[in-house]
Amino acid sequence: MAIETINPVGNSLVSDRIAGFLSLANKKLQSSLTNLASGSRLSNPSTDLAALAQALKLEAQVNRTSAAETNLGNAESFSSVQDGNLGIVGKALDRLGELALRAQDFTLNDSDRSNIQSEVEALQGLISDTGGASFNGIPVFSSNSQTVTTDSEGGTAALATIDLNGAVGNATSPATSVSTTNGAVDALATFRTAIDNLANLRSSVGANTQQIQFTSDSNATSRQNLAEAASRIRDLDFARESTNAAKSQVGVQSSIASLIQARNNSSVLINALV
Image (tube, rainbow, N blue to C red; front, side, top):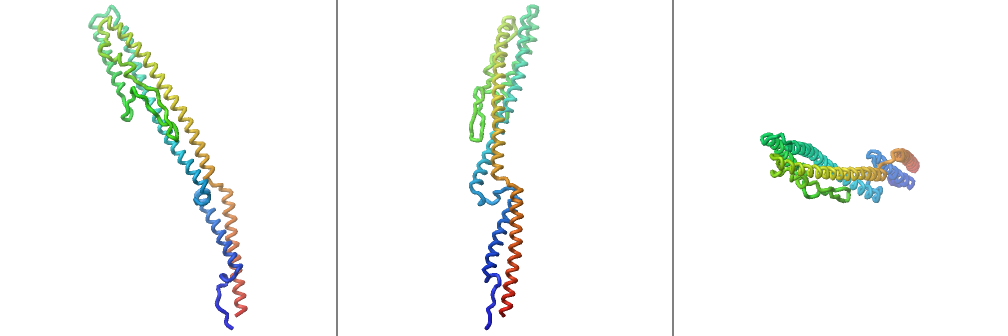
């Protein structure tokens, strides 16, 4: 009686079970190797869908927070430019006050006061030019307040208005002259008022800068905490995954050896029946 040719493995229930174990161990091994190579336990999205979604949202919030920090950094640079220009105007106003007082000297003649007036006009022009300064095409000084984005959710904060022209405009008026004694008296009063107004402006710039810096520090802390939270969700425990990989590799090798043994046993049985 002839015996039909059979697949020794395919017709063995034991071999089928061993092949199933081999397939499962190989899948686990490939997953562990992929995780180890990527450094993430979520290299395969199907591993933990909820964790992946949470990590992606946290990482997006980190990126938005970084963008807010950039905006705040630019706002701080803007305020620094304002303060630098106000410092120059302050020196000019100090000199104008000196000149106005000097022009009140009764020992000076009209020609002397005319020379002083020439310097006054030059300084007035400097202050006027400074009032028209710009930062990346944006007026440095304006009667309108600036609004800066402060956080990842699009929150904003209005900065104090820094209106240089409104504060010291009278000091740059052609009507403010030291060419006469009486004019010098009036000019001194005007320059002193402008100096007081400028001091208030510099104080406002300082308040704006402090507000920006505190907000930026808060964002930096928030960004770090968010990044750490996302990292705890996504990052791989290399020690544990290496152990899993080694365990799976042993399982693969053991299953292969068992499958070979089962194949050999089936072959021996078939040879005995032929």
